[in-house]
Amino acid sequence: MRRASALVMAVALILTIGIPVTASADLAPTHVTADDGAFIASEKWLDDRKVDLEVGSPAVGALVPVRLLLPHGWSAGAGRTWPVLYLLQGAHDDYTSWTRETALEAFTLDKDLIIAMPSAGPTGIPTRWFNGGTEAPDYETFQVSELMQLLQRGYRAGTGRSVAGVSTGGYGAITMAAQHPGMFNAAASYSGVLNTTAPGMPAVMNAIVAREHVQPAALWGDPVTNIGLWIANNPFALTPGLRWTSVFLSCGSGTGDDLDPLGTSLEGVLWPQTRDFAARLRLLGIPVQTDFYAGGVHNWDDWRREFTRSWPLLAASLGLPS
Image (cartoon, rainbow, N blue to C red):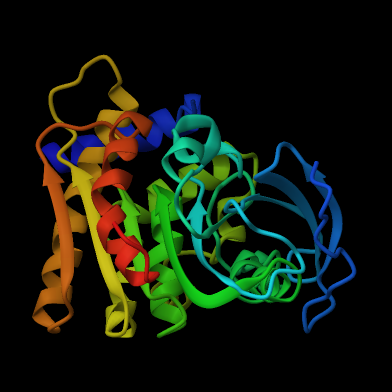
């Protein structure tokens, strides 16, 4: 009964108020292209480490922003490459969230890696949209193919890569790792959506989409008549694909904070499916590191802490000291 009430509250609050969100002399080449013609349309250096890109993406059919955080010593002409950590945004937020909401820049000051923070659109769901069969926009192809190739060809990105995300970004991190086995060394989800077909979850996903004034069926179609596509994009159904990936999952129970009813309700909705997901991995013999904590709210106050807790696993996956 409590779970059903939490689902109803989560859907209602998403629809009404949304999820709260809180130049270098050695320029990288902008003439590189991906296999499908994706290209760097613009490059704006914000300081000596942080650069914002606009990528012309055939998969998305638009210019897509990406923020990069580069290591000290990086240069376009360097005789070496760096491992890459992809950090994915949540719903109703954007590609700047990780540098805006966390101390990521200070934390990685001595870390020898490239951090890529791509946009997944306002819903923050990095997937191939159904859109009546047009299969566009395709944020999955943008992130795992177009952007990856551009970083390797123009920004000295190596083949070692891992991915992490919050909320719908957690969905993206786990789903992309499972759909592309071996592509990511590690995947971390902080309060991620890990079972999109669980009872009540299609309504939550539809509410997230509708909050951005998009028809819910544009995502994967009707969850009943198009159930095959929903299952094909459901992390829980894709767990066997994670056998070659180190996995970190965290989520709170969502109880005990009446000051943020939306964040509390969403976290409570995701709590059982995250625990079930971990149990499913263990049943398949796939190692998983978890941090399930009492209370918690679906916001950056918890996610900042969880990123730090997951760092040893992420660092090890990229060959870095923790």
